Length: 271
Ligand SMILES: [Zn+2]
Image (cartoon, rainbow, N blue to C red; front, side):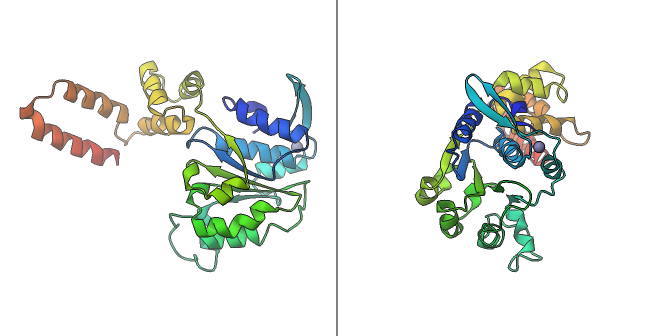
């Protein structure tokens, strides 16, 4: 995806573009905002642009902006998920570490993943492009000892390295981590844009509006709920919501047991 195709996060992208154009790009960034507002999508498009061999540069509102071309060898490798200079670090990588082999995916990012996939790889020179990029997903799940292990690479990454930490809960990050990163804020996605994206999966206007507001600007969340409701065997969450509101509006004490039993069953179906 090109940066120009990302909507509703223009402030964040403009900030990145201004820093890049003035050669003041931070080599460690924290992308902060709720889940589902486009942090990962932006990080991937930003990485694709940095790695691109033929960046498209143009001035928009007086700011020099850069985007990936989508055609060069680097962009093709990136789209195929095989770019040697791009690493997406997720806690699920633990199954490829000595400690985590054969174990279930952990709830937190294990220190072994940070050590083996970030710290030990950070000095490896970029093979294909100008930069080597590490995107650390769910950084709020990097526990304090793993964050401490990362401090040195955040403080002095090699000049060709860019680290992007995606974080939905800034309070989980240590002050020492935050102080070493440039913080880029991602706000909620506009309702009209969410509605336009919901249209193909959710033709009912009032249902689409409900999911758009329920998700509070998190496009990914709205799409997940709407998609869930289109699956044949899944309970219709929107119908359950309507019945719940209806039952609560006409609730009388005598209905308590019946309502409780219905809610319990509905919750089980949804779960
Ligand atoms: Zn390219």
